[in-house]
Image (tube, rainbow, N blue to C red; front, side):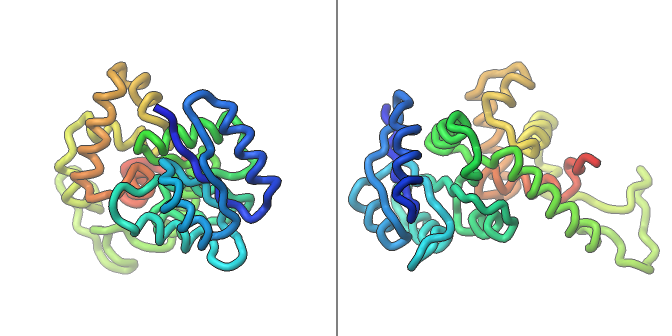
Length: 240
C-alpha cells in the first residue's frame, strides 16, 4: 500500500528536496505541496494524504495552527509530521499540543525522514532522539522546581510508607501489568515498536497491543505523550 504524502513548506527548494527524497522510496508518494497553512488545509481536502510533512514558520497561517485545524477536522485525518530547523522547546510542545504525531529537525538525514514518515503512517508517533532528549531535559528542569504529585511541600514533614518512600505514584500506574510497565519504560527512550520487540524478544504485533493498553490505562493520546508522562511521574529518570 502506497503512503500518500503532502509536503508543506514556504520554500520551494525545500519542498522539492523533500519530494525527491520521499518519492525515491518504494511505497511512498508525494501527492501534493503547499506553501502555507491555509493552502495545507485545502490540500488535505483535495489530495487526502496519509501523512502531512509540516513546516512550522510560514507566512499567513503557520504550521502549528494548520496542524491544530487538520487534526481537529474529524474523520480519517492524516498524521502530521512537524519538520523544522528551529530546535526550540516552545515549538516542540506547541506541536505536540496541536496534535502532531511526530517532530523531526530538518537537519536529520534522508533515512531518518523516510523512517519518520513510515512510522507515523503506521499510526505510531515519533520523536527524533535529539527531540526526546529535549523533552527529558525540560521535564527534568520543571521537576526540579516543583514537588511531584504526592510529595510533601517544602517545609512539611512527609509521611513515609512502609517501604520508606516519601512520594506515591499516580493510581493509574498501578493498573499496569509488569510487562506494560516495562513497555512504558522503553517508550520513554523514544524507540519504535520494532526496537521494543527486539528488546523484549516478542513480536511487533504483541508490542503494539501492549502500547495500546498502556495508552488506554494512562489516558494518554499517543506514545509521544507517554514519553512525557514517564518522566513527569518518575517511571524513569533522566540520565546525568
